[in-house]
Structure formats: C-alpha cells, structure tokens
Amino acid sequence: MPGRRCAITRAEDPTVHIAGPSAGPPFTRAVLDVAGAVLTWPVLGPPGLPAAEIHDVGQAQQWLWAVYGERTAAAVDAVASGAPAAELTLPEQPTALAEAAARLALGHWAARWWPTSYLDGIPALEPDVLGLELAALTHECQQLLDGSGEVEGAELLEEHLAALDPLIRWRQSAAPPRQLDRVLRLIDDAADNVGLDGEALRRLRSALERDHRPTAPPLDLTDLFVRQQEFALAAGSLRTATGRVIARGSGTNDWCRYPPGFVDAAEDAVSWTAYALGAGRRIEVEVVADIAAPVGGVHLAAEIHVDGSPPNRVPLARRDDVWAGRADLDIPASTTPSIEVGILLPGFDPGPGAYDRAAREAVRALARHRIGVAAAPHDSEAAHSDPFLAEIAAATAMEEDF
Image (cartoon, rainbow, N blue to C red):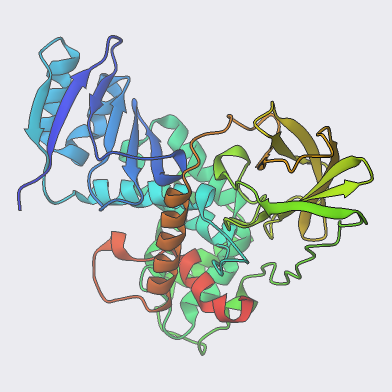
C-alpha cells in the first residue's frame, strides 16, 4: 500500500504547511507544540503522520527528518527558501519518534477532551496517572521539543507525583500492564535529567534497581488510585416553581465553551423547564456537573435564546451534582416560545460554533472503544496501540463506578 501523498506549501508569511488528514472541531484534534511548529492529528481518523504548521524552519529541522523522512525535510527547507510548492509521498510506516509524538498528542487530547459522563457510562481518567505517563512521553519526545519541553516535563512530574507510589505498587503486583515498567523508567530518567528528587522518586529508583518480579497478588485499582467514586445525582433539586409547565427540553452541550471537568459530557446533560407563573414566565436550567467540577467560586452561565432573540445569560451555581439557575422571561403570555439553551463559562467561551452533535457522539464512541480495549489489552508490540495506564485503571474500576 503506497504512502500518503502530501502537499508542502508556503503561506504569505514565512509559515510552511505540511498537509495532513482533514480535522473537524477542536475536540476532534490532537495537537502538539514542538520546536518551530504545531503538529495536528485527527483523533477520529486512522493513525499516521500529522499535519504541520511550521513557523521556524530552522528550529524544525532538528526533528523534521526523524518524523517525516529526509526527503520531506529537504522539501520543507526548499519551499521555505522560495522554491515552488512540492508534493511527495510520505513514508508509509511512521518512525518511532512519529509514533511517540502521536501518542503524546493523544494523551494531551485525553487530558483536555476525554468525554467523562456518568449519564453515558464513560469513566473519568485518573489525572495523576495520565499526567505521569505524559511526563514520560514528553521525555521520550525531547528531540521534538525546544527548551520549554524539559520544563513542561518537570512540571508534569511535580504536579502528578501523587500517583507515583501507586504505580510502583502496581508494577510489583501480578500481571501489571506491559508498558508500566517502561513508563516508570522514563519517569526516573526524566527526573534525573532535570535534577528532581524526593522520597517518592528515591523509592522508584530503588524499585527499578531490583529484579522485576511480582511480589503481590493482583491489586484492586479502585482502592489503589484514590478517586471520586460517589456520584449521587441531584437533578430536580432546584425546581421550586409551582406554576404551569409550558415547555421543557434539552439544551446544547458544546464542549468548546467551558473548560474540561465542569460538565458531564452527555448530550442530554443540559435540561430546562419553562413555567407560567400568573402572567409571568420563568425558565429554570439544570446541568449535570462533572465529578471534578469546582464547588465554589466559579459560575457557569446558561445562554438562552427565546424565539431567536438576542441571548440572555443566566448565572449557574453548583449545588450538589448540578449547575442550576433561573431567570424570568420577557415573552407574551399568549405564546408558546421556541427556546434554545447553551452552556458556557464567561471569559473562557470562544463563542458558539456549529452544533456538531455527530462529532461529539463519535468522540464518545472512541472513548468507549478505548475503554473496551483497555479492559483486555492485546499482545501487539506496537507501542502506540497500548491503552494509556489511566484508561486501564478506569476500565478496571468501571464496573463498580457505573
């Protein structure tokens, strides 16, 4: 099977583009900032080489040949120097660095866009476990990164060290994931490179120096990784209106309009009810919170359109396991309004995009597939086919949680 044909072009500014598979909304793209460029993979497409937007060709030459091959690196240099746009065939088999980069980008995507949903039965990924694997992958991909990459890896290690002791215990149990030993060795090497030290890292070093033989029975990963497991839904707690219900429905749950960890990713997580209270009208909005949603100090907002009018914003506060708020509506008592409700975080919201429900459902299907693979990892030796450690832990704990 021939490799993929690829165009290399230069924009009006000095930016050089390596075309890649088409990508959809932001939540369907895995993105990686590297030395002199930004690389992008479509998470819903087949694995392969990324698209690239190269703003510093000189910097990018440190890794271009190792990701795309020498012919592509030479073509990028020529196009940047003023030669006409080029088209060539990319290598069919990704290099080791390209595979590691794709996995690192996918891990960052999971940290930002994983569709955790109690309603849809998609478990959360333990952030400290994912963070440590990202630190290991960042170290593995140092050739791709500029000086800030080493700093980023050190910050990931320091931020997520709470999961290191549980990972060491997991390694010592019967039948640990095959990539766990490699991840821990990369973490040890990364910490040594940046001069990090501490009790947990010293315990890691000691464990790695010993012969790798299981010393404990299989572990209960639910107990091993301390996670929020109680999620008692409180939907309906806000509804205090005693008037007549005139309309109700589900709102738009656009993941791009608020940060990760705020709202359950299910399509029907947003609901609203409109009441007639005498001659007045009131709407009450409820949004199922993500299990990691902030408890206080942050307020989402509901953006409400009535019969196509300009939006009204209603502050939402978290109470128990819902974000909730209410507002009076200025509509004639004789009409049944058409109401649209969206959710956003003021100051974060980039504005409403296309209502791409199909893409969100495709991401949910991808998450379910990956959790299914994580529940029974296969024996392939390809590193990129392994589920993340956080996915394995989530799959193991899923039956109890959901």
